[in-house]
Amino acid sequence: MRVIRAQNYQAVPWKNGLGTTHEILKHPESAEDFIYRLSIAEVTQSCAFSAFPGYDRTIMLLDGDGFVLTFADGQTHALTTAHRPYPFDGATPVSCAVSGGPSKDLNLMVRREVAQADCSVLGAAGRVALPPVLGATRLIVALAEGIAVRDSGQTVELGRWDTVSEPADETICESAGSVLFFHAVVTPRAGTT
Image 1: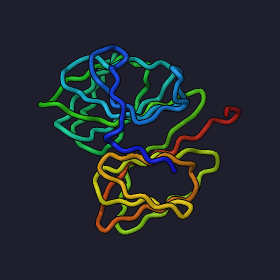
Image 2 (image 1 turned 90 degrees about the horizontal axis):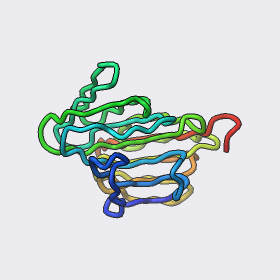
Image 3 (image 1 turned 120 degrees about the vertical axis):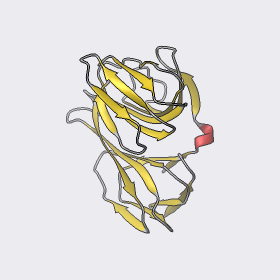
């Protein structure tokens, strides 16, 4: 079980230079054509998003007033309610119009030809058991303090926006109250490694 603390996320400029992303993890770590990348972006102004052809993206508001996404075909999506994952094609040109002050959002990008991701927000009200998924990688991001993750006898306490990355064996998440966490399972597509 790999634990990445929020204070250790690496700040990098957006691909188009119009913002900053705090990279949580990327696999493989040194690859430009990564299989998946998890990050937290700072959105401080209305601007275009970077294009990522060949990638499926999931974005979720973490903090702030949010923004409205406008896609090349004219469709819009208001990302103004926290903790609601929204998937879209990374190749589609999209811009955002901020709704107020700065915001932070969680981004998961997965290279479509190699893998797929199943994303959700779950609550650990007491105890929740996450079933194993053969050959997959599990990503957990605590959306508040007070959650513990246990796997193979190891238990770790997570702070707000801390992340756990691990093989998708059975995992137990526990909390004293109702604590939300982002949960993604990244699964290789058949015929890939």
